Image (cartoon, rainbow, N blue to C red; front, side):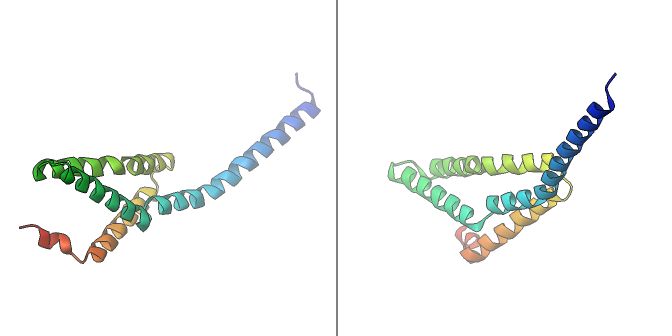
Length: 128
């Protein structure tokens, strides 16, 4: 049977561990918000756009037909976004999805609108 001093020591250690966990949980929303902001920062979208544009340009320069270059570029763009999608899903699962999934979707929509405004709605005029 454990002595009273040993039990008291165990309780103190458990209390210390729980305090550390509690502090981490208190900091977690801020950490997640910073991570989300980083994932959906406008400059990341700009870099992705430049990368996709360069990829398409290189395909065209190498003589790839338009229809093939477009399909390959679309696939490249989807693949380039995969790490962000996976990380967003992991964050959502980790947090239980309470509010974070909606926040991610709202940020995504906001960035999409900002991107459309920067382009000046040019994508609608390109289709013929």
